Length: 258
Image (cartoon, rainbow, N blue to C red):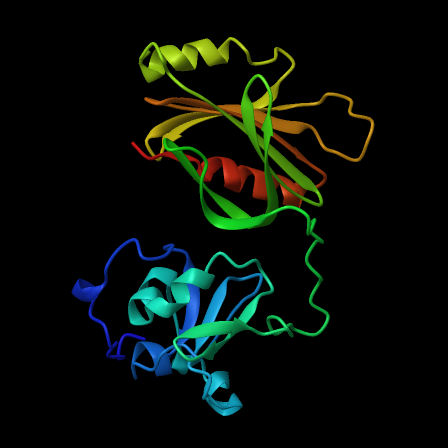
């Protein structure tokens, strides 16, 4: 990769066109300057090819580069409208845009089938704006809805994992340290595995709590993300250790936009 001369130099890369998450792309796009002809999203992430590479070319790892999706969007901005498609999607170039490949993304033999999502609700993945103050990264395709009541909560779910995020404002302009002290008072005395850290312009507090749900769920993950605009209250329910990893990834991605 060090010997490659990419079509776009670093100073020509415009930030923010697309997520900075990693992807695979062939040299036909990044070196030769060909537009993306075929793109698909699997469990690893996005893969972009020109569509004219033969199997021998693709089998040579020297013809592939791991870059950010934003770099490929700079090479070919026509990919941008399709980047929110869920895992398993694939698109074939048609003119200045793409059409969906009905066969979906290529699958490795015996690759596990991803959990089934509810087709009656929107599917989100990657960067998501929770409110004008808060954003997060959904670590995998999940269903999404807004539950409205006394407060409004964003619910993200897929089989094995449900996350309920409730944003609260800061009408009295309390400092984050004062707000953190307030929310800490609501932590259950039966909680365990407490964690606190600061990142992304916010301070985080999480803990586990066993509530005797009477089903297959493990002890839930609760907590708060606190910053100048207010805080986000967190409740995440899951069935396995792998689901807990996804839950923790979602929590750590929450950040304030100001």
